[in-house]
Amino acid sequence: MEKLNFKDMNTIEKNKLDTFLLKLSGKIVTPEDVEYNETRKVYNGNIDKYPGMIVMCSDVADVIAAVNFGRENNLLIAVRGGGHNGGGLGVCDNGLVIDLSGLKSVRVNTAKNTVRVGGGNLWREVDHATHPFGLAVPAGVVSSTGVGGLTLGGGVGHLSRKYGLTIDNLLEADMVLADGSFVTVHKNQHQDLFWAIRGGGGNFGIVTSFKFQAHPVKTVIGGPTLWPIEKTKEIMAWYHDFLNNAPDDLNGFIATMVIPGAPFPEHLHNKQFCGIVWCYTGDPADFKELFKPVLALNPVF
Image: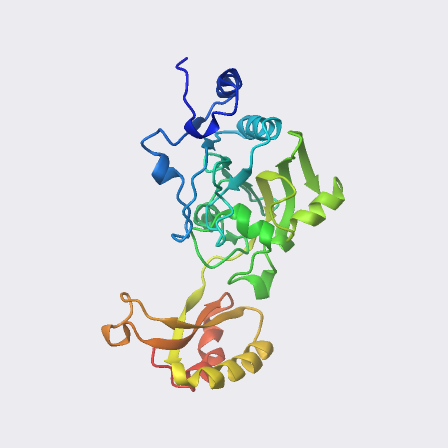
């Protein structure tokens, strides 16, 4: 096998690097590789970090090998699922990035309405797999978000009023711990660890797969309504009372925003608005009556 020259890992004995490489079915990307600059990127363009190596894991054995290598050589470790973390925690300077993007699989159990999801999946991949069966897992609002980061942070999305947070629907997780051991956690096994990962973040171990409870969702009515930015205080006060008294089938995220362009009409582009993005999961026949109070506020879109 070709010997590798790890430019930023020259404090590690060469034979250790070669032995590590032999344990992997995935690949390692280093600063000397042409794909390095593209591979080290995360979603937040303000994050510009230079890891010593990026391990592109293809299975759980790769994750275990990477964790052990990082621990034995006292390396700073970052774990990257979807790469959406706003603070850029999925990448680090000079250390070891364990990339889970190769751990992708989605299996839907229609008998129990559960979904097993790989640690490297994105939410759009989960939605794509569950939709034909009329099912959905409560998740976030951006389809390119990683399953791991959103789940371990709590997970608030369009279905939260109806079906709870993402962590409320987490039934089980497979994890690689800091000592390289592999465990499966659920309500009856490793209960403290199962409790910790449901909202406690990603510092308790690397989750290689999740098992979720899914719920019946086939078709929704959704989209934004916009008001002039000067009406923000008025709309927010109304929104608080309206949503508290609305059925759980209706959810709405309120925000101030600048309309970037298409698919919105041109006269709205680059202007500030107060907006609410709606999602309704109930009977379509009931939506028009339910939405009358919203339209009575004369949204501009």
